[in-house]
Amino acid sequence: MNKREKLMRSLSAVQFALWELHLYLNTHPTDLEAIALHEQYEAKLRKLRDEYESKYGPLTPIVGEGVDWLKNPWPWDIEGGD
Image (tube, rainbow, N blue to C red; front, side):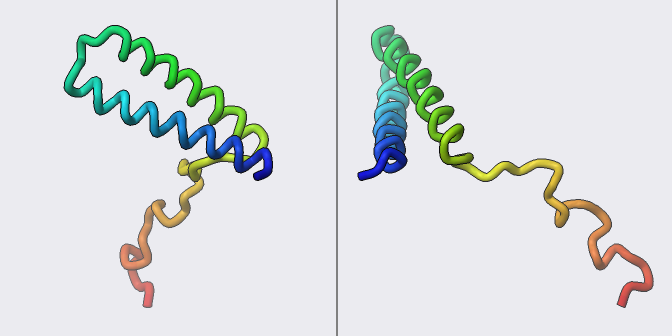
């Protein structure tokens, strides 16, 4: 397993633990230990995500103003366009 795969595996493990804590906190919202642990895992996830993205690029697509097909006018909005 190369470094990229190891980092992705670590990311996945932290995301899984974070999701499980999230589900637990849905039914135990006053558990201060679980809240603190959730915050620790969030920080760890941010650190791992930043590390991965700095080395290998974004994990998710970046959508912004560069999406040309969303800009007006649409083809059927142009008068006289056959």
